[in-house]
Length: 464
Image (cartoon, rainbow, N blue to C red; front, side):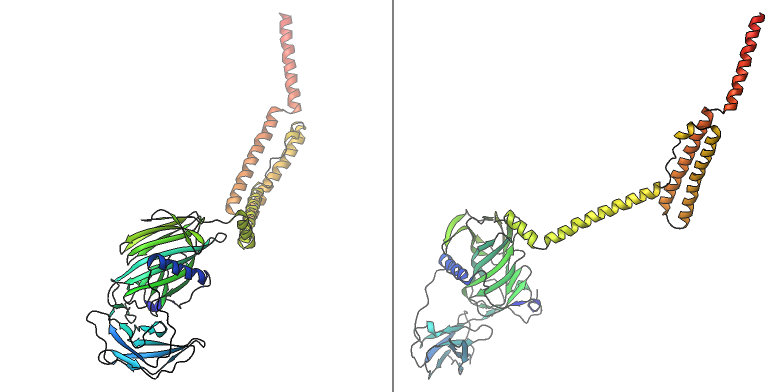
């Protein structure tokens, strides 16, 4: 990614987690990983002259002729920095400032104006103002001499209700070479790979970064952030804070180490879960600022390595908290809308189905034919004719309604087939009544013929 397309985040420290925790973490990390001597404490007295020398710390490097050195006075009460008259170094790199007028609450600082990297010395930490030393370096764009001596990741706060964790990380960056790393921001082909970069867990937010490096910009990217700060030889600390969400009972973080790493340490509050990962040792309990943390440690990771660290068993919201958040938020409204919507769709679908079945079956029930059996044949034939006429009329009405557009093609055909089927069934049933029950005249005629035949037979037998 080109730096010109990345958002720039100014240096600041978020109020959450607190500055106190950050300071404690830096102090703890310093005790663990990079102990050193405290700076010389010296109340700035009343010298009237400053003398010093500018040297080039790169092997074979030289101090540019006429290099400018600035004297800045800092008014702590007013928060102002005032630039005094600059001076230049001589052929040996020596410079001086004279006729100083000490004032209460005013401190002084000398700065070598060497371009993109401007080393400075705060004279409040210098015992001998006649032997001030400023070191400049030749520049390099290569990151091959940049390594990480330590990476300490601490989770000081966990909000179980919202499943969010606040993370503080201290990284000690070490430039093992003798040149200052400075990216070429004017290069149109510059990408994130050309910058000092760090990846962060997925979903991070509220990123804040501070460092001991010279001034530069923080370029936030989707996977983390990159830095344009010059990196002179030696070690410098980078402090970052951010918030990440976690789902379930934890999260995984694939830590990418393009510069390698000497020591990795992860800390989680006691009772806040467990940590596991590649090359990490057993969990140990440590006390930081009177709080107990579970700590794991790993060592000696080569450049380009990736470590998958799993945080699990992290705190979960209680049932009451989940229910409270559910009804306090807008989620329950959405759920209710879905439930009601599905219910309405079900009712509408059933109504449409019932309406269709009613339309298909309307007026095609088989007439009650039980009463026809006991009727006089003439009356039965008359009633049968009326019923059949009604069914044929229903069929004609159906054809008219279809032509008027009251029926879909499928419904019309289904309805018509059903009417024709019932009409045929009606004809078969009523015809069977006529076959089973002969008319009275025919019955009497048959009876008379039978009687005559019987009488003839009896006569023949008598004659015999």
